[in-house]
Structure formats: structure tokens, C-alpha cells
Length: 333
Image (cartoon, rainbow, N blue to C red):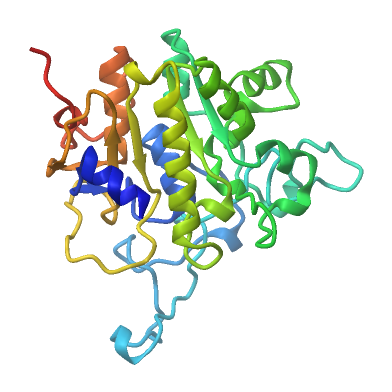
């Protein structure tokens, strides 16, 4: 595997955990904001049922006592906690979304009668980067394609665009129906083709996020490991040939661990996580070589690293206990 070779060459963080207990939807929010989104005044059918402790999903006494004897049974395992936090997948309010526009309505919006997550308005890393004047872009595979052709959304026979992997598309700041929102989208939400052009031209912004499209994102169930491995390795080769490589740091990690059992339990920090251990690589001319970093990191460590590098306003959810990735880099002499 090509990524394993890069891990051996540069820094592999073997004590890195996903930001929160949950799947792709929730962990993408933690990647950009260190926070869980909310759905105020949500309909009852979206809300989970929990036991009297307010945390454990209610079984109604009908669940097997052991996973060896049967699958867990819950009264209501839904998208929201009883206090309105969105923890399981909900669709974005703006296109591209898994919810189509209402017939005859605005083609840029998801049909609100089908309960997309309402537009969020709390601070993200994008907000604090912009406030500091730091250029940033979220590049996504098949972004332009999904905007023009709904047929590629959740389609295993095509590029398989995953709308719930696009966290900025849930925020009011990127509302395409407003002049300001449309302008923000043009600046900050771009396609993989734009990423390739900027790599080759040496015009990447100071901070880049890249999310591959579904057929190369290594997700169990609808794609495979090796195609994603080859894709990310190709992206990294392009970055290493870029005029900007000499001043670049690449962090490769995952939104969740793929469902495999791990003998290393996550540390107990707060009610949201961190969650299960995930791979993380630091690839850079400044990264330690042939190095395994045992420092405790989680997804908020990436935000912590950016905050330190650009002297940003810290986001409240960034965990003080987590490292800031400094140990992966050579110290200045």
C-alpha cells in the first residue's frame, strides 16, 4: 500500500482519535468546528429515546444482554439527542444535498418538509481564518458534478458524491440564495479540478481541506481500500511536485475508523469524545522522518495546529488535553 510507504517515510501518529463518538456526519463537523451541530425545535420523529441517565439509548427491556446473542434493539435510535444535538446523519439545507429541492421551488435549497438540518451559525475554523485574513478553501471531489447532476449523489455506480461529508454546506454563511453566501461559496467551496489546477500552478491558499468523492474515499460497504490509497498517494505526489512543497505540511487522517475493533481505547475527555483511534500521517519537508509519534492527538489537534500556526482565535471545543501536532515536526535550531 502506498500510504503505508509514506507512513514509514514521514511521521505516523499512532495515538490519534476521531473527534467524536459517531460517524462521518458528526466527525466532519468536529474537523471544522470542534462542536456538535444543533436542530432547534426538531420534530419528534428525529429524536432518540434515552434512559433516565439522559445518555444511554433506551432499549425498552427488549435488547439482548450480549452482542453474541443478537443485535442491539433500541426504542428510538435517531439523528438527534433529546436536547437537540444532531449526532447521526442529517442532510444539508443547501444543494448539493441528499434531499432534492421542492418541486417548483428554489433549486439551490433542500426541501424543508423533509427535515434537512437547519443552517448552522456557530463559529468554524473557516470563520476564524477569514477573520485573520488567512486564505482557505475546502476542495471536494465531484462538487461541481453534484451541483449539476443529482444522479451522482449517493450513487455507487458513479463518483458517488456524499453530501453529509461536506460540513461547510450546512452553515448559514454559505447560503447560496444570498449575495454574501454565494460569494463565500465561490471563494471557499471548490471542486477537485480546482484543487489540481492550484497544485500545479502553486496557487494553493494557506489552508486547504480536501475531501475525496465517494468512490475513492475508502469507505467500507460502497468502495474499497486500494482505490482510495492510490488516489491519495497520487494527490500527495502532485503536492510534492508543487512549487509550494518546500513550505507545506500535509495531514492525512480519517473521519472514522471503519468499524474495526481496536485494542486501544480512546481517552475519556468529554461527553462527545474523542472516539475511536484512526490513522494519521504528517507529510512535510519539516516532518520527522521514519518516526512514530505516540502523543495523544484527536481531530481537534488539527484545529489546534492551525490556531497556533496562524495565531487564530481558539475555538471553544478544541481539547486542551490534545497535542497540537508539534511533536511531528523538527524543532527549530
